[in-house]
Image (cartoon, one colour):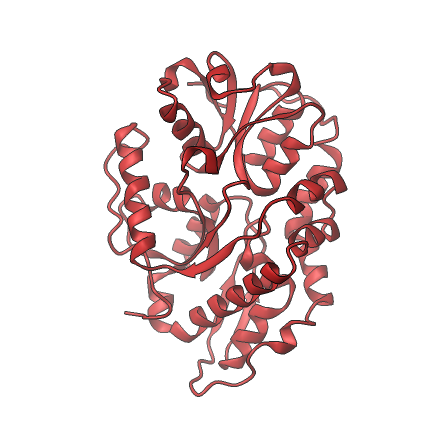
Length: 344
């Protein structure tokens, strides 16, 4: 497998200029959107029999999941305030690995990631727990190929360079697709890159395909002549957006964690009633219209509390990682979820 030893040229092409600005806007521009939002936040619950005057330090992911959307709409602040607490918003992270480091380092209390990145970053530690999980249609993740690559099917990936984020969603999607088609990973040139570097490499033709998620997946598809090789739903992916807190914070501030979950659930209900909402917020944050139009075609996700069904999915992912040598040792998933409905 190849590491990321690519020499990037000066950013050029449609995916670089406006799209890189969009990636930054997910962190910085979100604040401006949030300050102007709040029309639905007024409908959040304004009273609670119990209270917690604690502070929830939250760092969203640079992606439009329900944590980010509920931040922009002011729902999280309203829900947390309703139980007596407050929110200290921290800068957004581009991926889960730095989020996990911040959670363990004590600089934030709540963040987001994916099932796969959460499990690989756990590394036997049980100090972090998932409290909410988003279920998508599976059309928001997948593998996309450049026009010049000639790739149209999973079989066509043989001998080609495929960009993935190591140990996370991208590598999981690629390995799962290959496994479903009985193709050894050794027949593919795996290139480990983070999403922003992969966007550059993809647009400049330095890689042939890209296994990726959400707005990055849409960005890849918007490139002229790009071809979706496979969607996550086509290969039975169990990878989800997950929302994570520390075990200590969940035990000491269950009302605040529940308030954040309730805000995300309210946001999910709003998106179900107005599916265009996610694409609209993307456009307001600076995403090009062609990318937003792709996002607009994706059916809205739902959200559930982390429960035994989530733990079962985690175990299936862990077994897959062990079977295909993606971890040095088996992943123990016991104790990795916190049920906000039935805290324990």
